[in-house]
Amino acid sequence: MRITSVTGKIAYVVGVFAFILLVNGFIIANLVNATLDVLIVAALNVAYVIVGVRCFRGAGENRTDPRPWWRATARPAAGFWIGAALVILAFISGVGALASRPEGAFIPAVSCLTYAVLAAFYLNSSVRLHGMDRPA
Image (tube, rainbow, N blue to C red; front, side, top):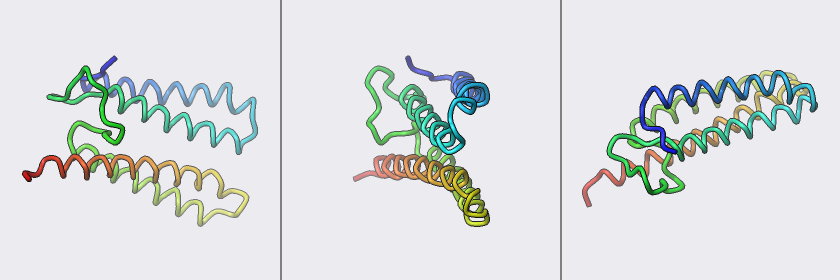
């Protein structure tokens, strides 16, 4: 399945985010402790990004072959914007972790690491795509 329209991409992001929020609120949070809950939700968020970048296709992209493992977006600019937003979120979460008492720092620390890993993925993809755009 390939998601090519902007509407489809927005529906995927909003729908899966809402699904994770509901599953966490009604199921996961009631079954496990808070530490494990944060780790499960972080893993689900990374998984939904990975599935999304495998399914999304931009204009002019090959829709039959799988993307290379490192490719997150169709064009470099999109990855730079998403990566920059994730860097900002990682920074905010990192500041929150550092400003928290030790017993309350785990959640923002996990968020910081998750955002940082996703930012690195998007920025690496954009740097590689940008390099491909340059003539040899």
